[in-house]
Image 1 (cartoon, rainbow, N blue to C red):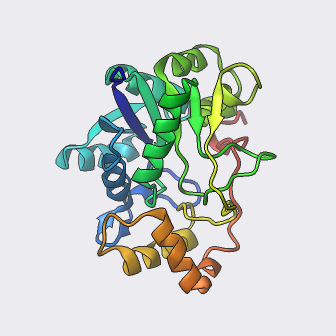
Image 2: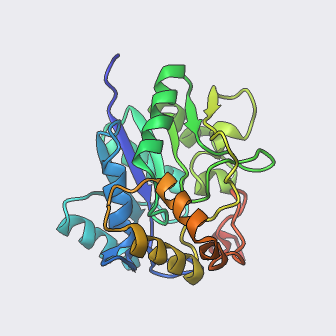
Length: 257
């Protein structure tokens, strides 16, 4: 099989609307971003992990942290995240692009590899382990992996016009049936209602509790987290009231007054 330069790009910025500065907040004695980078680097199918943040001054600490810790970084547009991704992919010569987000510290390298293997086996333009409603997701929120060819990303970069397509990077690849060849990887059971991402103080508390229980084994998988929830179902109550944003939501701060 021909080798592709596979670059995992982690998008993140300090100006989160619901939990400012969240990507550098502490989880088990490390910034949240560090966990995402470490776990992405464990994926066997990934050649390079890059953090893509903005050119805003408040993201200077993100760049400083990355440079101090040997993490590749690209800085680009605040709201046009698709442009930020495309420019990062271009700068690091990606053939295949993996989209991850810096607020998902439980991202699973084995699951990433599984999605990547399906992507390579099937020859599609875009592969993921979740698509937005009305399609039902089967993996918990916070394990999202999206993979596409550089050519597909470039096409989206040139042609996508809608605000949500620019902010959420890859909707142009899947929001119009037949535009691209796409594949969704599902789990055999439905755990799509579980929420393991970090967007609020309650989410952060839950993830800290998970790492407090499993963090000694840095290589724990999402199935280990699932077993933890089966043993301690009360954990799910910590962030059960949080409403999840959808891919059609755009940052109110970019809308015209």
